[in-house]
Amino acid sequence: MAIHPIEYRYGTPEMRAVWSEENRFACIVRAEVALARAGSEFGLVPPVAADIIDQNASRARLSRAKEIEAEINHDMMAIVKAIAEECGEAGGWIHYGATSNDILDTATGLQLKESLELVDAKLRSLLALLLKRSSETKHLVCAARTHGQIGVPTTYGLRFAIWAAEVARHLDRVEELTPRVAVGQLTGAVGTQAALGERGIGIQERMMEILDLTPVEVSNQVIARDRYAEYFMFLANVATTLDKIGITLRSLQRSEIAEVEEAFGKKQVGSSTMPHKKNPIRSEQVCGLARIVRSAVEPALQNNTLWDERDLTNSSCERVLFPEATVLADHIIRLMTTVLEGLTLREENIRKNLHLLHGINMAESVMIRLAEKGMDRQQAHEFVRVASMEALAKEKPLEEILVGNRQVMACLSRDEIRELLNPDRYIGTAVEQVERLERKLSAKYLKA
Image 1 (cartoon, rainbow, N blue to C red):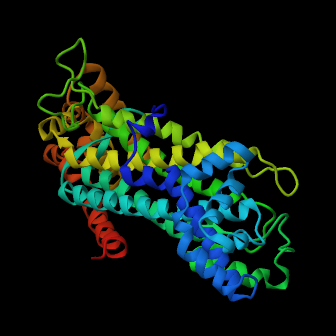
Image 2 (cartoon, rainbow, N blue to C red):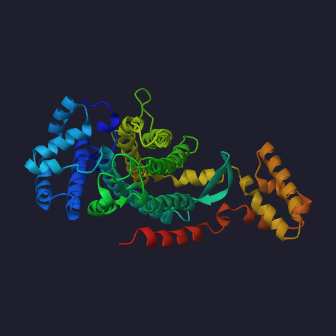
Image 3 (tube, rainbow, N blue to C red):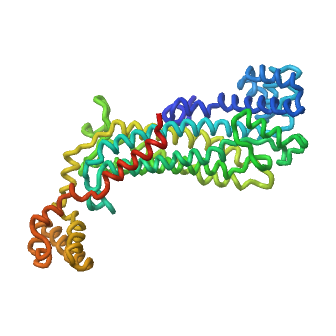
């Protein structure tokens, strides 16, 4: 019986598989095999026993481990016994010199490595799409808004480019944090490697080499959880970028703005009672689930504050945090990619909103030109501010108010004013910025 929505509603099959019980069990088995192999190379485990373990450990079954756990009430030892049953006399060498978290945390490292590879691939797809949409709309001038109020113009291309640059920084973070997060250890009961003797450091390094993980430099019984806290903060950061995009798209889809629209199926229902509704439900889902991903940060930080060499308070917490936050973060990356792929830009409304204030939002352009013509910048600001407030109060075009100002007309002609109030001529380097960013990010992240 499914209970949590990531079991039946949210999540990609590939990321669910990474955090499934079956894959968790398989990663633990891989860690035990690597331990035996590394131990044999350093004379700790007989090579014949390591060969038998290597050949037979994969026959162990999760169902059998659960049966044993029901009897002994220790999950790691139950898995050790389940593997040992498949390895005959060689089973006595399984888990030699290790403590539970040497294997459990190393298995987590394997899962995190798989997860980050999937997230990296999805972020690259999202980046490629954002750059594509940015290039397509780099000349599409629109009303920018600050404090929810219309300001000077921007372009849709610049909006998409800003999001693309943020996603690119997340890709940098994946590369930077993977060696710190995809780690394993073999340090023994309290971190001294006493059970392994002087061969401990070498065995640990070889074990992690076999598993393609980074070995810890030092540890106690558990890998320090600052590493995992960094991982959850990364997921939260990614989720917040997606939340930001989702909020913008939701705002721009408001009926009174109506500049963008999520894809809406022919038979899709928007409301159970209002048949006309076309709601941005995918963007809303992204924004809602981003809250859950961010909520993992606080417990992840607290998991680093364990008693002495360890306690068990992190364990139950992490059983929830890792699959939930990772599956949901992966899900909303894919979902936002789907939203952006199907997003419709309603250019007629974009144009209408751009001219909604009849030039008043172009006041800065006039102020700057007056200063260029020799007027004191602060005086120019005041002249244009007063004219703008009058235009707003009288609901008149700014041009009409400006041409009635003698000081302004002493510097500018009516044709110059009209040109200065043209939003298409006031986007600065927006197009150049988009083109430059596209070249840079494409070369760095999207090489064939």
